[in-house]
Image (cartoon, rainbow, N blue to C red; front, top):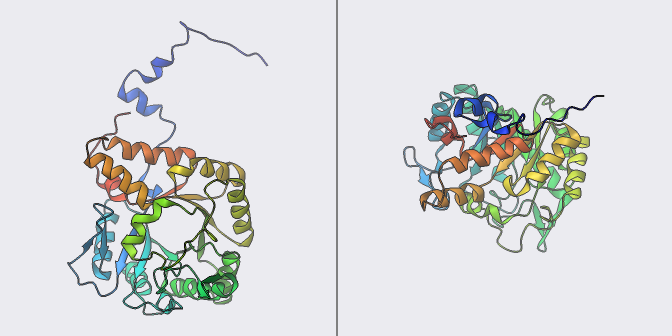
Amino acid sequence: MIVIKMIFPTTRMRRLRKNFKIRTILSETNLNPEDFIYPMFIKEGLKDGQKEHIDTMPGQYRYSLNDAVEEAKRLENKGLSSVLLFGMPRKKDELGSSAYDKEGIIQRAVRKLKEETDLVVITDVCMCQYTHHGHCGIVRNDQILNDETLEYLSQIALSHAQAGADIVAPSDMMDGRVLAIREVLDMNGQEDTLIMSYAAKYASSFYAPFRDAVCSAPSFGDRKTHQMNPRNINEALREVELDIGEGADIVMVKPALPYLDVIKAIKDEYKMPTAAYQVSGEYSMLQAGINAGYLTENSIYESLISIKRAGADLIISHFTPWFLEGDYEFEC
């Protein structure tokens, strides 16, 4: 094999960057509307036309069921392909029973979205928004019970699938939940429902605005016994491998920007459809910088490009409307 070494002045790398059009056609990574999943917060009992602004997430809202569907339809006309639904019930209890109620807020939202849109509908499967203690599973003596929780998570996922969800996304990080959900879905005629597993979900401080958005802060303790240690990457690979073995169709890394190395490692190792969640704290951090004049909107685009470049096929981001509606031209 002949290796040709070309050095300056023959080789001039700046030729590849000499103007906007050249830089654009030679871009190795690009963002497309279908790459994006928009997370939406739907609040039971909220009156139509009275969406609630989320103070910790400027530009984001809690919607009534009807308003959420109308917003999804509006964004679909702009190119949106997928939504990820989070519910806020009227009532919470120890077992999060409204999470698997056939007439629950998410179940009704799924049915209406499937009737009125062509969107891919993804549902978050967890208990934290539905339990009065704010934890992701069944609690006894201040301990989260892993195996007992699996039954409830399976019921939630099945109720979402029966309502018409295309993809269910367990975010609880209980051991064995993907297998438990896959078995229950298959036994009930839902073998075509995909599972997008929050496979490498870290115990992150970047979730704080989200917990305010859906009122899901734990009433005691924290989530460090089931969410991952931010210092670990090999553990993330093990988590992903286990979820793939249990039947996950798509794996996810959450958060995104602080864990780009994890996204890359997972994509390189498993070649699986891979999602990354640019979470509430990432969104609010960039918005704060922009609103203060320290950053420009190019920082949003740059952050999203970095997630795609790291290996994410899908990006869950609160910036989705900004990307779809933007009349900007990213100055690359």
